[in-house]
Image 1 (cartoon, rainbow, N blue to C red):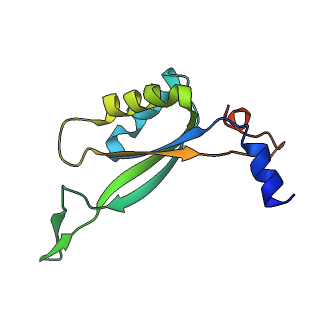
Image 2: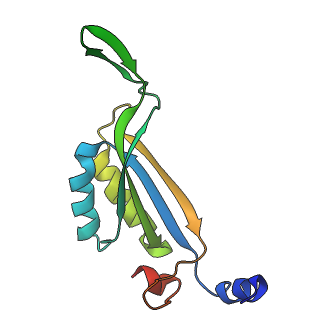
Length: 128
């Protein structure tokens, strides 16, 4: 299939959203339960390390203080329909935020298409 015909085919597919939330690992279970209760069961979770406004902390290892810049966090990724976006964001914010520096961040992206490998379903059908 040429790129032009592929693009023409996906122009009729509704835009979906990809939500990436970087949060404290201790918040994962509550967020996962909240998403499940909100009928958003599909997610991907990855351990990540990073630095933000919280900076980092120091660790004493064998009597020597070593500054550690990177904090351990988890990244939660959900690809959802436009209709579920606010519900997904509310669940994550309600369960992850304590009002402190280091609570995390949420990023939202447009997703043009999704394809289920098993049967070739596309768009919203592939993420349901």
